[in-house]
Image 1 (cartoon, rainbow, N blue to C red):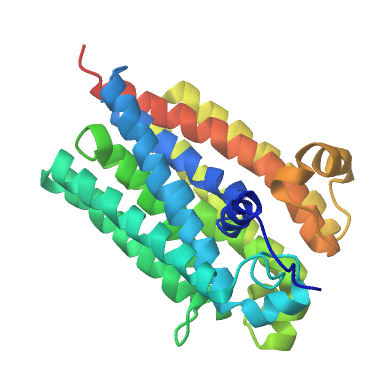
Image 2: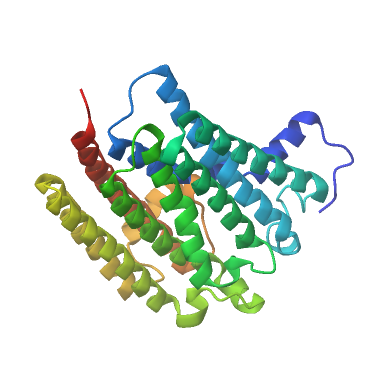
Length: 334
């Protein structure tokens, strides 16, 4: 691909934004929202809304953006072959500019973490600072040698689960009030849900992983068994969410979670029977509706995962919010 002789300022800014991969920023939003809801302590003031925006900025554009940017910096050789249109291999950004992109995102994220620590103080402020600091460190070693956690699913899946599930949920819960005991359970369930989904997301790169020596679960045990392992984790998450909801006294929400579990199992059975073409009734919705948001793939198993992801995410999002909201009502002080 020829390198442009000169790139204007607007195109350069666009390239820097593309390196931060804006489509991934929204991935932390459900955990942040559920964490705030379960605290029951947010007030409808300008101050609280600004804090909510700041924590999204910290975990989304800056935290998630850093993870995407640093990944491109360390995967440049692969991207030159697999994704030559990305900002660095296409020549729109130099390697040095890409490095500065990740450094600036890192510094701003840490800066916001320090702000929360100083502004909120106590254990709550420390939880937020430690959460974002560890998440940023994990994002770095996920892509950077010598650890390069992404090389083995047994390390990469928990890393993603922590950064996208556990850390945002606990931080958001600590944003306006003390961390609730129920929030620890809900944060853990979000962690395992993220683990299950990242396992399935590796379908898209199974061939490349095999050739490159990366140990994704698909490479190690095959597509059907990978579906089986991931579905088992997902179903246990739903079952525990239903049980905890019932134990906490939320009988109605627990029924909704059970319904979500049964619907998920019905879809999972179809995928286990046909890993390459299952739940074809969702094909149009994914390719024509959600395709631009969640992506498309030439790998058939990955396309079936994308169809399942739409259904599962909606079911988990609704039930997770419902239970988190009910937890929050216990702690509202009028």
